[in-house]
Amino acid sequence: MGGAVVDLLSRFVDERYDARTSDYADLEPLLASLAGPPPAAPGDLGQLLSTVEHAASKGFDTANPGFVGYIPGGGLYSAALGDFIACVVNRYTGVAAPAPALVQLESSVLRWLCDAFGMPVGSQGVLTPGGSMSTLSAVVAARSTRLGEDFRGARLYVSDEVHHCVAKSAQIAGLPRDAVRVVRTDDHLRLDPAALREAIVEDRAAGLVPFMAVASAGTINTGVVDPLTAVADVCAEQDVWFHVDGAYGGFFQLTERGRVALAGIERADSIVLDPHKGLFLPYGTGCLLVRDREALRAAHEVQAHYLPPPSDDPGLPDFSAFSPELTRDFRGLRLWLPLHLHGTQAFVDALDEKLDLARELHGALSGLDLELAGGPDLSLVAFRPLSADPDALLDRINGTGRMWLSSAPVRGRTFLRMCLLSHRTRRDRVEEAVQIIRQSLEP
Image (cartoon, rainbow, N blue to C red; front, side, top):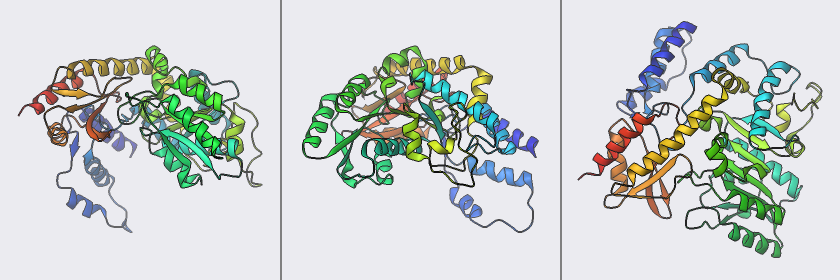
């Protein structure tokens, strides 16, 4: 059975480079065939794998080197092998006692990340299913620390370019609907620190309770980095929790240029990261780093008599004490195995390559009949045609089957986006993309 699965996956990986970036042909019959319940009698593995392979071929291909829409997650094969092992071994790592060595393995990666982002000794990392769950835990920790039990008048500050998961997290965390206040951005679509200060001072004077501000280390629409140091200064001055959404761009911190672009991130009270983006891992791999581990713990820990005694060893944490999850999969191995197998320098080099490719792409597109949305600060390039319909241009580009871009509204106008973050997206595909865009612009 394992051999048959590995054969399918090896073929799948090899075929990504020539496969179409999207395919919706004959979708309805396939959906109809998959809608029924499971049979009472056993099935044939070969036929079932064929069905899965066919189903996986439909939609847009996020593992394809031509997929540069949204924020790509390439899905390292070595990480998948880690998940395969983790699922078969099936050890429970929600608390430390049942599998202390595996918890130590996961904790060592989290300590490495805390150190990489300048977090102090008393900080804590936790792996989550993704950026949205990480953000929820950050909001809950900030709410618990700064507001206590009374949420009335709470204010959380974001820019109009911030990811929607912040507002969603505030809603789920029980904050009033009007708790999230949108602060203006500057001409470069970055959070305006002066406007943030004005909003906090104004709200506090009105009897409201400012408690948290969110800055972006790479926005979702255009990839810009907010002025993190200046925002950190405002948060320190006004005594509000400083949160950085680094789900897209945070891992560029591992590179020399990224540390310059993200200067100030080390002052954050909490940072959201998505290893399924910046470390090229499979979807479902998020991360939260919090400066004060006890603040995160106090917001999440609930004791139960049927659980093992709680761990007070920072190297062997009970992960359930730092997140909403008690039952969780063993996520640590999908990070630990690739990092130890390939070495951290391989990831640094890959991230540096994406920074190079984004700058080369920006330079090539600047010579075409396009308006570019500044930058790139990191690896995302946004542009729109000067004399053509952007939606029509997007359809022509995606219709080639070699590239798949997405679009985003930027101050009322549609921009096309290319985010270079898949480990399979190399220079040859970026050069091909420029040629496709050039040809698609022609009447």
